[in-house]
Image (tube, rainbow, N blue to C red; front, side, top):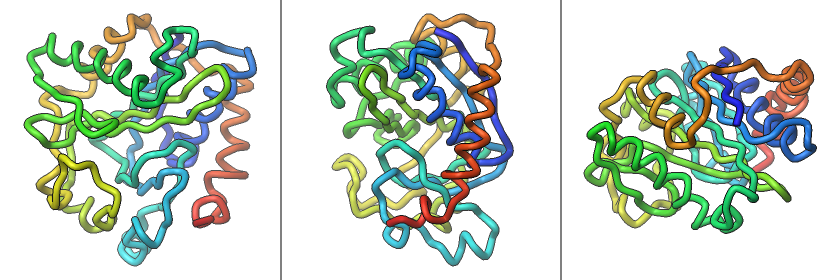
Length: 241
């Protein structure tokens, strides 16, 4: 599995490269991949099927210059930015039968990460379908995009969080896991007691990847620029629902 550690200032490029890495594996140009990224500017990102008016405080985002984007994977609307380390896994279904089933694949991936965190003294639990939590408070949200032979797993590891900003830019979700109950963002979300570099090591160890990161293929980078321009920066994609 190759490892990439590449973040862009442009939120659209961060989303585009993840989709390109999935496409690259599916087309046989490259195989499994783990990418780390952390956007230096805050932005709101919707799940692929969500409705903007139900999930986003659009006036606040416009007033504060916070971009609204839509990713290619499912899952809920979140606030991205500094303090949220993202790990994007492109995994082959040939790795194990559990990856072919959505619920089992979340368990397969998150149980590995949980074990790696616990080896560092961090006790986390799997909650809902796709969350990791500490004492009932969410520290990692996850989502997936599936193709014929590979799955793209989007995960975030929160090590610093602005809960007030979450409440300012995100509406309270209608679809919420049972363990959340009626809690607002500031009492539901927490942080992992590890820094970004240690979290990178934890995820790499969970999947036994090389320590040295590589660059994306030149064609992948070119395709990401095109996809960011033609899809992820296009209001027709973001505001399609």
